[in-house]
Amino acid sequence: MHKLLPIKNQMNGVFVHVTNLKESAKWYSDLVGLDIDLDQVVSPVYNIPLVGTTSLTLDDHTFDPEFTHNVSTNPIFNLYAPKIGEAYKYIKDKGIEIVREIERVGDTAWFNIKAPDGNVVMICNC
Image (cartoon, rainbow, N blue to C red; front, side):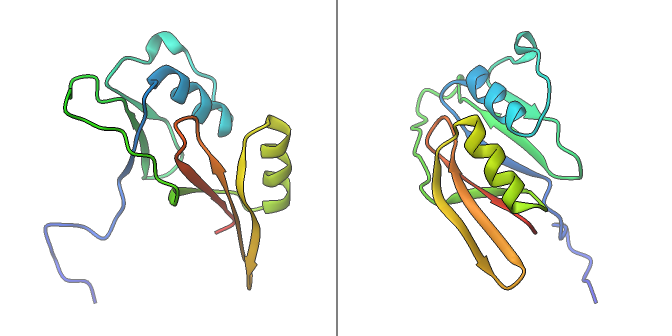
């Protein structure tokens, strides 16, 4: 039974902190097969249009001079790839750095890649 609380049991968005908004918008859009008009990418944030209820927002903190960019060496989120072997080959063919090879636990499989700012993103079949 779910209690009625002011915070819902739903993930709405993931923020990824970047240093070059246009480069990152191009990289993430290309990764998930989206065309992008870089003239539409305007600082400080850009939302990658994803399928589903969760959004991916890239943020370069243009208006925050106190911000310090810290890279996460652990996955900051995962992208869904039901056929993990095909996803792995796709990433290799794109020349994207793989920082953790495919691992399997039961029916779950994943591997990790490095984004342009050095953050780690997981590619997972669930």
